[in-house]
Amino acid sequence: KQPLTITKLKKMKQNGEPISMLTAYDYPAAKLAEEAEIDIILVGDSLGNVVLGYDTTIPVTLDDMVYHSRMVARGATNTFIVTDMPFMTYHLGKETTLRNAARIMQEGHAHAVKLEGGAEIAEEVAALVRAGIPVMGHIGLTPQSVHQLGGYRVQGKLEKEAQRLIDDAKALEAAGAFSIVLELVTEPLAEAITSALSIPTIGIGAGRGCDGQVLVYHDILQYASPYHEKRMVKTYADIGTTIRNAISAYVSDVKTREFPQQEHAFPMEPELLQRLYG
Ligand code: KIV
Ligand code: NA
Image (tube, rainbow, N blue to C red; front, side):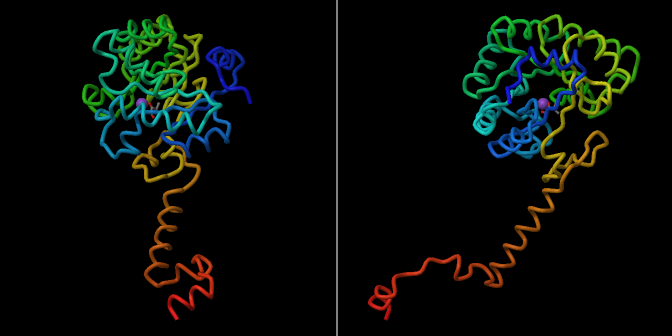
């Protein structure tokens, strides 16, 4: 299978071929996602919640993103990888933005970066694109701004807010973004944004009208995620229960001496055994 390019992505939109994206944060997840033929792997800063155990994505650092991105890159050597730029790594001037994105590309081995925000970050986006770094936008509910937004709620419900999101999407496209994530916006607004753009939209909690869909690995697998019961998530397996039951069976085997058995142990040559221990 040929790995995806941003040119191919645009063609998928034109041909009406849905784009599949899933997060992954380490080697095994990336390997399995690639084997399942996902179009794009997102090393999302949602790893702050589902891997690092924070309440928000705000404590996630650039080092965290680079560290996880390189594990993913080793697991999925033939898949397009997008890595999130974390909180406050693209707001301190273009030079810092470029330097930080360069680390994600050079040390994290990502093919593109994702930034949260609209028109207000268009200059950063343009600078990255000029430097040869593909940029995915992300508007609607932008978790790095949760305290500014006043919680995790559906965006674009008011007319002014909806218009601003359309303007933001257009500003990102004009700045050179190759795609935009729409998170937690109403279905009709996501449809309107999708048809206003020539670059693909990838939705999460944005309904049926987007060019692609993205979900969080731990959510779709019920892998100790606090979010798998959210309306926007569909779960495809219950890995959490499988793992918990397996661990609990192991604990019980150890306690009852059911494990290990002879077949798990290493014998000694009978002569040596006799000589040493009688
Ligand atoms: O970090 C993440 O997982 C994301 C997706 C939800 C789009 O940004
Ligand atoms: Na993110």
